[in-house]
Image 1 (cartoon, protein in one colour):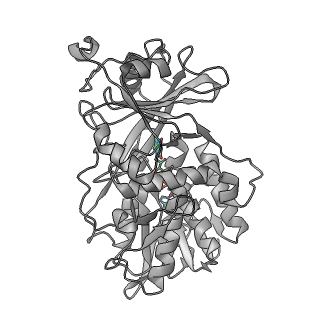
Image 2: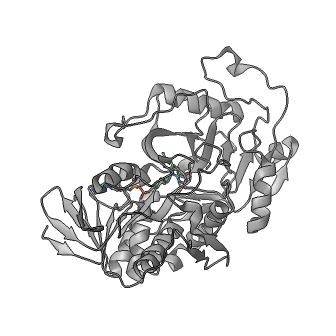
Image 3: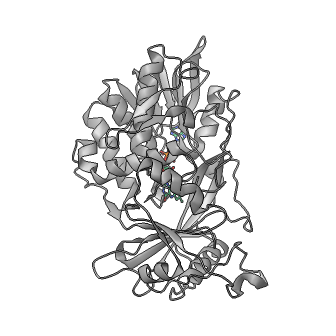
Length: 436
Ligand SMILES: Cc1cc2nc3c(=O)[nH]c(=O)nc-3n(C[C@H](O)[C@H](O)[C@H](O)COP(=O)(O)OP(=O)(O)OC[C@H]3O[C@@H](n4cnc5c(N)ncnc54)[C@H](O)[C@@H]3O)c2cc1C
């Protein structure tokens, strides 16, 4: 690749970097996106369960997810460009948030009320009516399979908080591709198989990046959208000393099994379920499949990584058993196959499981990182937040002193970007899990 220049370099063509590129291109900024893989969405985005839900621990987090849902619902309109590879689709299944002390419904309902998100409170009988075959036993706290208590009978029952508008996006990698080609259509350039090995500075500002093949890309603005590699990129840039929130990569597995008979109705899908009572989440998928992930129950070891590239790319028997057997407690008709099937991926976990969308103390260097296994759904807004930040901060606005507010196109809400600041007080209301 020849040396080149642009207004902005985005490092990472995942769903976040591609969304950022689209919004920067819409502002008329010449944008180059570099990614070390061979295409858009080939990083952690490709492993995403892509669930669109609204229960976060802060008003701004909930409002961001609610606004983003409207973007997914009107995806063609959001993109304003039709990808010849097809469009990712939002499937509205509704979501059951099973009662659990780690995320009490009393904490989330006021946020839903304030943001205007429809919900229903279900007791155990109503939950059984809505989800065919569900076991409404209360098993809290989650236990390892090796524990004698794992198969102990439930003593009481759980209900759930139901949000009818939740669902999932059927192809997360295609969603990133959709954003990338829409950005490309507006003039953004994507350079694949292009690994950043150095972030360059001129005086107190960033000035560009150096690629592994020796070429230089120069720009006065660089956006770190490197997913689980974001911490490593910050280290290359010498950025991070002022951050109160830190990131660390964590390996995860999502398993795929046949959905139990009757879970999906004729022509309709069963709901997504977040079950902190047992330590799993699951959602339906095409071909009558059920995707099962974990919610970091305290009884399980967490797979922290020093380097995301060292993550075992294969699903393991232990994790498969742990997650699928837990799901089978909730759905007793679920068959647990002998051979594990699914996908391994890596989260970019922030100290409080809340993302960082911000400028940094290095002039011109911005971050869209720390997405903590829960920001696929918010990519449309992450793109808009970063475009607002770059546009206004480069024009001289002091975002640290006077945080920018984002006015939502669909819901009219105003989101305070201080909620995603690198220097925020760590969010103590977070569940400390992927739920945020
Ligand atoms: C298993 C799993 C399940 C998930 N489930 C959900 C869910 O249900 N709902 C939800 O909302 N979110 C979910 N998430 C989270 C969501 O998928 C992520 O937050 C999102 O995909 C992150 O996108 P990204 O663009 O930041 O990162 P990535 O997709 O990882 O993109 C970063 C890109 O940067 C590139 N890169 C890194 N370093 C360099 C470098 N030095 N030079 C060049 N390129 C570089 C990488 O190649 C990569 O393509 C899940 C994540 C995982 C892993």
